[in-house]
Length: 330
Image (cartoon, rainbow, N blue to C red; front, side, top):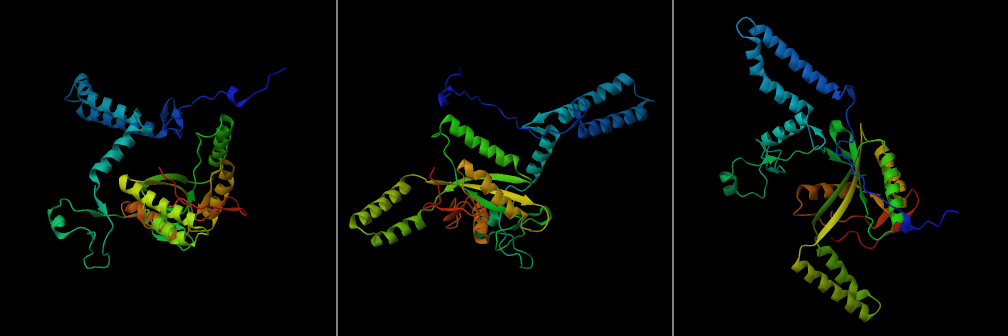
C-alpha cells in the first residue's frame, strides 16, 4: 500500500526561465526569416562588389578585404544578448546614445515660441547647462474619468492596483497552489499586459495626520494614548531612515478606442488572482493621473499615489473586502 504523503515529502526544483521565451520561427536550420534576409542581402552586395572589382582586383585580395566586415556582420546577425538579437540590441543602444538624457515636463506649450524649460530650473542653471533638458513626451494622450488611458495609435490601457502575497510563510503545498493560480492567470491573458512593481519613499504626513486626528474619538483614554504613542514612534522611525512603499500595478492594453473590453479584463484578472490571495482593483481617472504623475516625478509623490489599494478591493464581480491600510512597508 502506498504510504501517506505529507507536505515535507514533496520535492520541488527550481527551473531557470530563459530570457528569450518568445523565439522567432526558424525557416532554414537555426536561421530566422530576418536573419536569412540580412545575410542574403549582404551576400548579394558582396557578390556585386566582386563583379565590379573583378577586372583589376584578384579574388584572394578581395576576399581578404571583405573578410573582417563579413565576419563582423555574421556575428551581429547571429549573436544574441539578453535574449535579444545582437543587431537589435546594438540598434537600441545607438538610439539611447543619440537620444536626450535629461527629460523634464514642458512648462508652457501655448507660449510663442513654446517654452519647454521646466519651471523648477533656475535661469542660471539653464544658461550653464549643455545640453538643455528636452521635453518629456509620453504616449499618454488623455485619461478618462473612468480611468482609461488613451495611448493614441497604440490603443488604450487600464491600470489596476494589486495587493501582495507572502510566499515565505506558506507551506510547500500552499506555495504550489499560489503559483498554479498565478500561472492560470497568465495563461488566460488575451492581450498585452504588464506587471509593474515600484518602490519609492513614503509620505507619512497624511497617515500621521489621520492617526492623530482620530485618536481623541477612541472609546477609551488608553486607546487614545496608544494611538498617539504609535504616531510618535512612526514619526521617529521616518526621521531615522527612509521608509519605502511598494506598489504593484497591473496594466492591460487593448487596441482601438475604449470599448469596455480592457475593464472586463480587470474583472477577469480579479477572479483569476482571487484564489492566490491577490486583491485587484481598477483605478479611476484621478488615481491613474496620480500614478502617472508620481512615476514622472517620484521625489514629489501625490498624497494618494503611493497607496497600493483603495479602501475597497474587488476580488470578483460581486465580492468586496475592506482593508484598513493601503500600503506595504519595505
